[in-house]
Amino acid sequence: MILSPQHPLASRLTHDSRLVRAYRGERSDTTPVWFMRQAGRSLPEYRELRVGTRMLDACLDPAMAAEITLQPIRRHGVDAGIFFSDIVVPLKLVGVDVEIQPGRGPVFGSSYGDAAGVAELTRIDPATLDEAAGPIAEAVQRTVAELATLTSPGAPTSTPLIGFAGAPFTLAAYLAEGGPSKDHLAARTLMHADPGAWRALMDWTAELTGRFLRTQVLAGASAAQLFDSWAGALSLADYETHVVPASAAALAHVHDVEYEVPGATDAAGAPVRRAVPVVHFGVGTGELLGAMTSVGVDAVGVDYRVPLDVASARVGGGVPLQGNLDPALLAAPWPVLERAVRDVLGRGRVAPAHVFNLGHGVPPETDPTVLTRVVELVHEAGR
Ligand SMILES: O=C(O)CCc1c2[nH]c(c1CC(=O)O)Cc1[nH]c(c(CC(=O)O)c1CCC(=O)O)Cc1[nH]c(c(CC(=O)O)c1CCC(=O)O)Cc1[nH]c(c(CCC(=O)O)c1CC(=O)O)C2
Image (cartoon, rainbow, N blue to C red; front, top):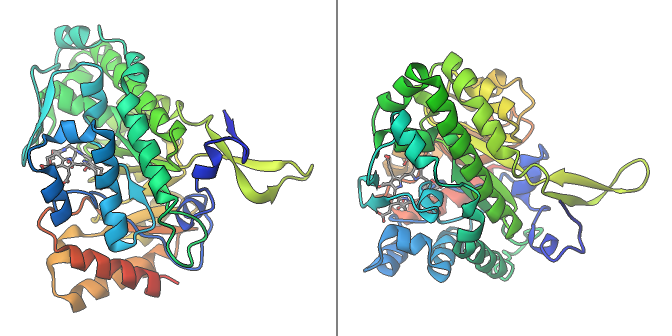
């Protein structure tokens, strides 16, 4: 699907932003920055807005999800919004019994860690997500429309929105366990004990994830992030054998959504087209970084354990990187935090391009003024 400049969506696909250029491997006048979990409990305006509304109800209320997404952009001046949703939202939309317990996380009405559970789950057709995802498409459209009015001084274009989804393995880890777990034993046992059931589970989560991402990109998101937060629990061999095919299948749902790169033409004078960029992030993925690039992504998000120059070497040197300040340092004295930010920026220079981020989400108790100060530092030091 080609989104030409004439396409009603293209004007909102802010593909000339610092962020999207960085994901294409092009450096701008300054390093773009955003934070995972920038929307949420660290912001008083979020806590106030959420009073009396359950998490998943907030995610499925287009006006509220859009407003929550916009809050950190207005406050911090970050270079991207990350759509306020959650990795279990697509499961909820197709009728899986899941709720989010504050401070604990997603909890399911049952677990799907054996052949019988997988057979029950996969009786749900993932294609029903397209119909059910109306509130998500509307929330993205509302957010992108508002972002077009928030263009910050000097920015080449309005702030882009990043869509996101939990990757097939991380969703499968929650489904197999029935909720959060430390070591994801149920999922890791199933992949070896019953490869047929595991494959059926991963094919199902891959299609659901792909459709969820496609909904957000077609509604106006300018990039997408795939969170395989729990992939770090796997050996490289298990990740390559039992996870990579499903992540690649999920991303195949967005590879055909292209836009025309402004001002770029090929030898025949035709506009250059690029697919909407995808970033792949996981936690504890030091041994998996190279394999993560093989699922068909433009950039890799690095957690806080592997320095970016080391990560760059592990992905072959030619891949844009995102990250990777240790979130713990946000509560350290400013001179310590400033040194760490400058160190991340320095190491990020070895990659073709760098998007500054944390090595995982913003801790809920973070002082929001510190995040705003980090954005100012990155914009000044990241030139
Ligand atoms: O398993 C766990 O450790 C946490 C499980 C948990 C989830 N949603 C949750 C919780 C409870 C909690 O955060 O207190 C529940 C959850 N999800 C979210 C929030 C908002 C906040 O953090 O205060 C919250 C807390 C809601 C509340 O209690 O008010 C929203 C969310 N989850 C997520 C994102 C995407 C992002 O991080 O940027 C975002 C949107 C961020 C934004 O718009 O700025 C993604 C998410 N949700 C979830 C996961 C699984 C792995 C993980 O959390 O590390 C992941 C992927 C990840 O963060 O690596 C599941």
